[in-house]
Each structure stands twice: as C-alpha cells, then as structure tokens.
Image 1: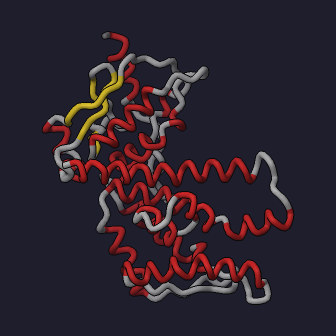
Image 2 (image 1 turned 90 degrees about the vertical axis):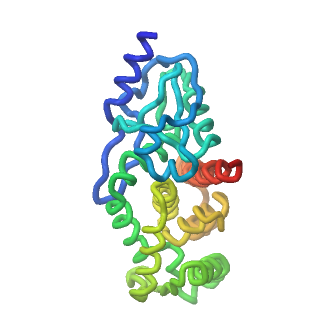
Length: 289
C-alpha cells in the first residue's frame, strides 16, 4: 500500500503546462512520463461530497464520479479533485490508466480523455477567459470562411459543397452570419453581432464542453468546425476531411509524403475522436440517470 501512496503524491505534484496566450494547455501527468506503472488496480467510485462540491460542472450532472488507483482517488495534475460528470466517462479514463503497460513506461499521450478532463478542471474551470480569448481569433482565419478564387474551379466547388452547409448551420444554430473571403491575405470581415453570438455560446458552455471545443478548434483551425464537432453535427472523420480539404486536394496533385501527411492525419483524427468521445460519454451518463 505504501508504494501507491508515494506514486499518487508525485502524481499530483503538477506537470502538463499552464495556460497562456494560446489558451488552456492540454493537461497530462507529465511528471510520471516513462515511469514504471506504480499501481495494480484501477476503478471508479462516486465522488465524495466535498470533492463533488468543488466541481460544479460535474455536480450538476448528478454528484460526479472519481477514478481510483488501488482504491485511492486520482487527482488532477494540479492536485484538484478529478471529479467527472458521468460514470461512463470515469470508467473510460480508468481504462486509459489500466492500459498503461508500455515497454517505455507510463505514456501520458496515450490518455487523451484524461488530458481533456484535467485541462477542463485545472484550467478552464478556474478561469475560462484564456480559452475563450484564444478561440475567438480563429474566426479571423477560420478554414470554413476561406474559398479558393473562382478560377480554381475544382477546389472551389469542393469547398462550397462542404463549407456552405457548415456556415448555414452556424447561422441557424447560433444566429451568426459569418463572412467569407476569397483572398488568402484578406481576412473575412465578420459582423460584430456574429462574433458576439459565438462568444456568448462559448460562455454558456461548461468546462468540459470548452475543453472539447478547444481541442477540436485547434485541430481543425476552425471554430466553425470545432462547434460542429462538439455539437455532433460533424463526425471526427467528416471534420478531418473538411479541415484538410485543400491539403488533400494538393496531395491528389503532388502525392502523399509518407511519414508526414499520413502521420498528421492519424494524430488529428485521434484528437478529434477523443473530443467527440469525451462528450458522448458525458452525455451517456446523463441518459442513464
């Protein structure tokens, strides 16, 4: 029993980086990267009252759940209670820890759901402003708001086919009528009320939703696509195809760089899938109540 306690104390001593101009940095237990697994069993338990009270977004879902390592509640990298909004999400994160038996030791990058939860609780729940302020500028360079010039007929047609429905959805869902640019240099001049509407939508999200939105937006270089992912309007595969539309078109013309394009695609899809899974498991818990 002594070894797991020492491991958990070191586990909760920080790591993973902090917030900043680029928003909320993904939080993982980087202090244990490469360490030999120091626990035997993983599990889940209902959150203790004092722990649940510290996380309103989880408490609002019915009291919250905690992951355990050898029976002890797992903390976040910042030593906060890791209280999750649903039992299915807690079990999924417990499974990430249970699968940590790689030859090189514990690998935090293999725990994307844990990373999202820790980012939500350690950073966004404490102060959502850095995340919101980092996401809003994506509208100025949003992938969905740029079209190739008319003379590039094939690419332009593909973009219109994919981007127009997304912009129509944002307009209908949020009342945000975003502008479109045909010049890669000229940023789209979005109406102020459209930007305000999307900012208000973000402020209405809890810390878990914002963490998933940040993940999807950063990957797609598009808040429009990020919102579509967290609202389940796009699947991860659809979002990846949408955000890589021009790059995939260029690959058709010039070929795939093995070890480059393919690796980027796999990493991007894994990240988008984690954001979708994170929220699906959160919602599944609500449906089970």
